[in-house]
Each structure stands twice: as C-alpha cells, then as structure tokens.
Image 1 (cartoon, one colour):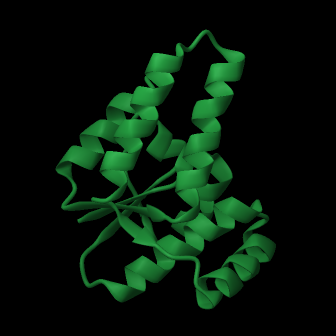
Image 2 (cartoon, rainbow, N blue to C red):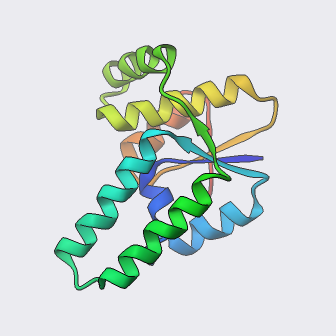
Image 3 (cartoon, rainbow, N blue to C red):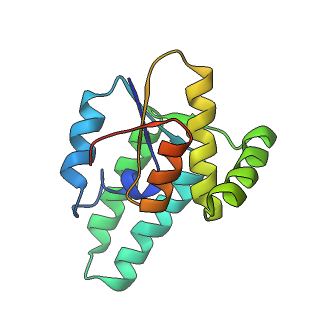
Length: 142
C-alpha cells in the first residue's frame, strides 16, 4: 500500500501535534509514502510559520528542514504536470476545494490510476478528506 499525504499530514511527521502518532504509524506500515511536489514548499512555509508564531528554536527549525530534505529523496513525489493541473482545476470547482488541496487530490488520483497497488489518502482537512472519499480513494486512519 502507498500512503499519500497532503501537507497537513506530511508536516505531522516533523512536528509533534494532534495526529502525529497516527501519521507516523501509517507511514511506517506503508510500502511507500507519496505526496505532491507542492508539499515541499508548503511544509517549509509551515515550519517557518511555527518559528514566527511559537517559541521554536532555530536549531529545531534547522533539524526539521534537514530531516525533510533527507526524507524527500525517499518519497514518491507526484509532479505538477499539465494534466494534474487541469484535473486540479476541475476538482477545485467540483468539490469546492482550495487550490493546493485540489492539487493534492488530483495528484493522489493520478497515482491511484498509475499504480496497481492500493492508495490510502491522509489529510486533516475535512473537506479534502470528504472529496477524496467521493473520488473513490480510501482514507488512512487518523
């Protein structure tokens, strides 16, 4: 099984918060972890926001970025191709999704069609999770 993580789930691999244990458990059980190429920039933005809004040390911030950089090489990263971008636009309209959420859903659906293995989708946004279910994806436990 391939575990697809949107950015809200991916960040929980690096930041201890509600849901982190579930994401780690599912990631360890998966054959592979996948995400969209846009998740890298989104995760870095989330890490930077934590530095601005919480008392997070620069050392901890650097450790998170370094770990993400090391792990990134092992993730299945879905590129934002013209086809995925077009499908994202359709999903944004159809399911009332924000742009990056639509990109994540379109990326997971592309992966689902490209691989014969099962895909579990994990997101902590209710609307995105509901849209993934409506599109036929199986949700990972969170």
